[in-house]
Length: 414
Image (cartoon, rainbow, N blue to C red; front, side, top):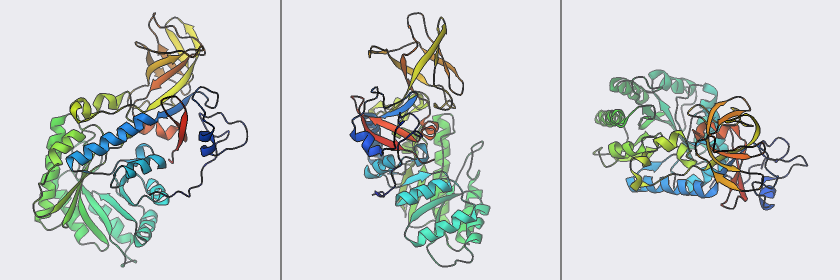
């Protein structure tokens, strides 16, 4: 269970997307008031999340991992939302993955019991803090992909020879990728450095396949990850329980195919999947790249995030300007996707053929075909593309049930 005594941030004039000009109120009060999306308590633009879609996605991935015998450590950097962390852990997640020392600090403060930091930690200040937290029972795993990364831990803790070991996973990368040893020989050198360094313990091997282009490349890379793990085990550099981790949100079906099963004789193998974007999914990049498109019998995901914004100008035929821009919507993996329009009368219709052509800081340019009339004051509901760069733009995200009633408010901590 995560901590329940966190200070609840007040909702007031600082709460982007919520209209609170009066005295501050607590989020629980806002929810208890039974506000609905269009009753004036939400201002435009606003990012909201659908509870039913979140629940569906949480259940789908928990079932997928259980079916394939995986442990699940979803990447928390997607949302940095404590209530979603709690839902993931309650749904059986083994750990939460993060990307930075500050995100690790957030998880520790929230009471997340086990965390993977999917990068090398080289800064002595958070390393010393982590050593102290390990003394108090915290469980964390760091990634290392160089002898220098191992030495950074050993040097920082040289004057603190006692206490639990810092547990690490040696990362195998691929040519052109971001981090990770490029060869198995380099990975062996890192593992040997761990064996020679006090207070550092190697618990397994990790990989990230998300940057590869096709299933064949991913399969080849994951086969090398297996080969590397077998090599380290044969050299006596791995413990009895070995963690092997992979995980973006685009190729977890190939991860299941190549890393599933009992393929490491003499060791107990724990395969840990780290997919993160699944929790909200999207209507753009991941809608096109989810593995469930290749194997629909395995499940499906639903886009949970909606960005509502108002048409403020229709200056020429076929062009509408909406008050939403780069400050509000992700644009690194595709532009927002118009889904439906709500008229001043309250009627809502699905739209087709309307596209976002470009974004300014606070304006979106919509191209509309002749059969779609958009008018100033209309509200457009957009799906987003790439949730990892949507959550960080919004400190407060109302969660709606299927009647558009606010049932929760997500708080994000970036």
